[in-house]
Length: 137
Image 1 (cartoon, rainbow, N blue to C red):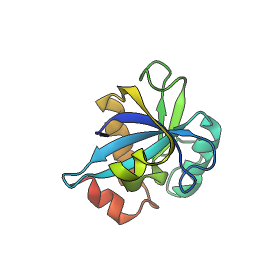
Image 2: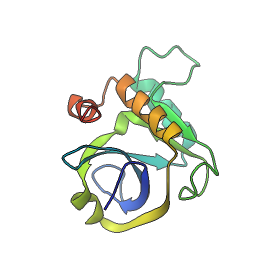
Image 3: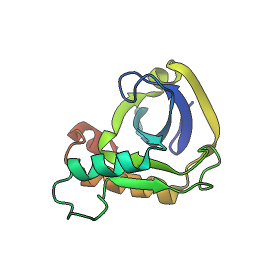
Image 4: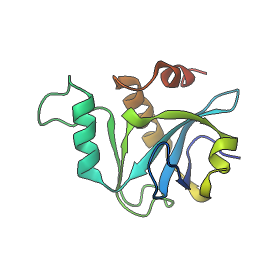
């Protein structure tokens, strides 16, 4: 059963394409809905996408929806990763665990980084209201 902070690997055609990506449960509601983001090693690509999605970010500054997870922060993430908080989405435990190549990892993401990602989701101009509302439940 997936819980807040857990990291897993999944091939998710709807949200991250054909290659398996690490995904992180940012929040689990009382009703079992999951707020999920995925982590990638394509650091510069994520920085640019976050900047483009957040027009109020001054040129040359890092968007508040960009969160970097340094190597060694979470034993389940093999190297430096970035999260685009603009891509947060809702799912269920059943949907995630039934996905192709699902593999739950041993280590959870520390609360400090979960808090940064939650803040980034709340700052986003493009995350659906249903996702930000789920963070309150």
